[in-house]
Amino acid sequence: MYYYRMMDSGDWVGGLFMALLGVLFLVAVVLIVVRLLKSGNRDPQRHATPLDLAKERYAKGELTKDEFIQIKKTLSE
Image (tube, rainbow, N blue to C red; front, top):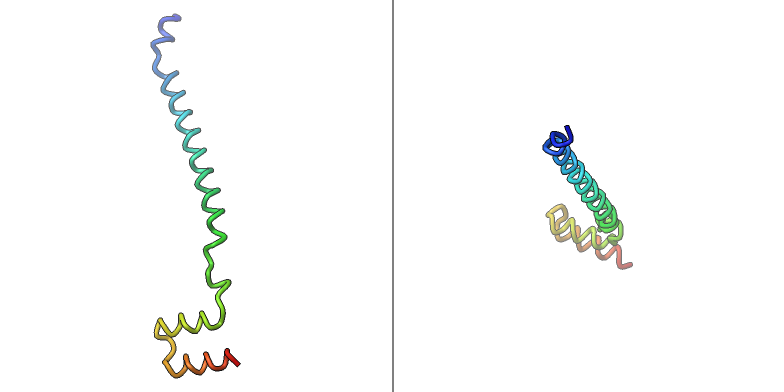
């Protein structure tokens, strides 16, 4: 009976599966922590000045040149 248990492949396959599951869990935890640490720098709009926003809108074509110049003058006053 002991010899039969040693030849049973279920023991080492189950152990290998559990080890892989543990490694996958650790990798997932590390990835989550890295993403959380990087997420603090994701919002550049939060520190953008009004002039930066006007430049961005002008670059996108949302403002004409005259509108941009007017906004720039108003902000510099």
